[in-house]
Every structure is written in structure tokens, then in C-alpha cells.
Image (cartoon, rainbow, N blue to C red; front, side):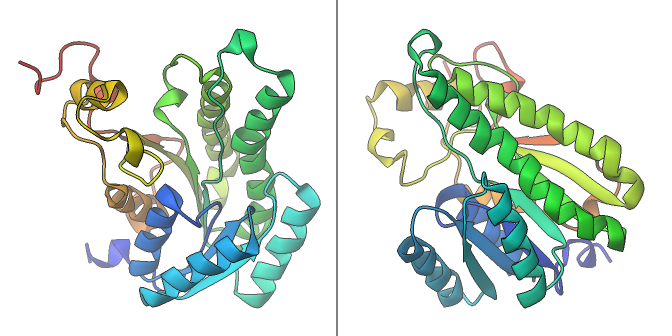
Length: 264
């Protein structure tokens, strides 16, 4: 019984922005749990095709769709296509996002607005069109990828923090409005992970590497695969009475403002 709680066989999971990095790790986890995965990208068809080929090589049942999650018309038409060509969407992971590291006093308004549009408005748009089917079926799982910046700020990421803080509250309001339809809406807040993007700074002696290792009680960067368990839990029957929560997968950073145990 406990194993079946986490079984996603027969489910269709849509994961936005899952052509690389943490999105790909979570999509892989859902696929390995039995779900048919639908991944989206926006940068190029070539990158999307390469990602789909990688999933297929791992033995997963995958479909890829290229569209901009901030374009409402494109979202609407592609959600309709997915549901017609693949099947009803049971699980939605709003993962697509961007960050622009610029101090607020120096940031162009257009750049601030772009971060808000991608990181906060697009989860609203995609959820709006996916949830209609979930409401009709009275079942569904929505997972919004939040951040530690949903809880605290950092220099030069004000727009990102504003968006991710808003996404936390959007998650709670989605849960408030849709729980009565047996839809669970929750979030995952990743900490700092060892990805291709962070590889250049994950070396001893680099100030940011030393900062992350020093301030994380676990004393290490996270492995992207560490997100799979949280994603499977929130996508499965195991979380049927969990709603409006954000699960932080951060090695303990948010648990302390003092000296972590790994420091002498």
C-alpha cells in the first residue's frame, strides 16, 4: 500500500522549462515513477529535441512542446494540443523561470517586469488553462517551483525574490480556491544545487562556493536528483491532504540563522 501511494503509472505530467537542470531532474523522477511526461521549452527546437532524446534514452515516455509560457494564446493552444494528443494533464509542474542579477537601484523596469512575467505570471497562465480539466475531473496536482527567495532576500535578486515571494502566496491562494475540487497545489523551494550552471563556481576557494558550503548545515551543494522525492510526493496520492505548502529542499539553510553544525 505504501509503495502504491507514490505510483504515478497512467498519469500525465506537464513540466514547464524541463529541457535542462532542475526541471529535467524533476521530470525524470516523475517519469521513473510511472508518469508520461510532457516537457516544454522556449529557447529552440534543437534544445527541446535534444532533451526529449535524452529522456527517451533513459527509457521514459516523453513528449516535447515548444512554446512561450508567458504567451497566453500559445499556452491555451498548446494545452489543448497536449490534452488531445497525449491525454488529460493530471500533474502540472510550473518550473520555467529566469533570474536577472542586478541591484534594484540599477535595474531597468523592463527587466524587472520580465522576471515577474516569467516567474510569477506564467504559472498563473499555465495553471489557469490546465486546472479547467482538473476541476472537471475533480482531481489534480499542481506544483509551483518556488525558491528560498520565497522567504528571504539577497543582494541583486530583488525581482526574482519579489516573483518567488508572490508565487508562494499564489500557491496558497490556488489551494484555497481549488481544494474543494480535490486539487492539491503545493510548492517546492530548491536550495543551491550542483548543476552545469553552477559548475564554474563550485570550486574550493571561490567566495560563493565557500559561502554556500559554509552556510548549509549539510555542508554540500544539493544534487539535482535530491528534488525527485519531493516532486514525486507532491504529485502522488501520498500528498492527498497536503495543500498550500512549500517544501524547501535546501540542506537546512532556512533552518538556521546561526553557525551551522558543520562549522568549527
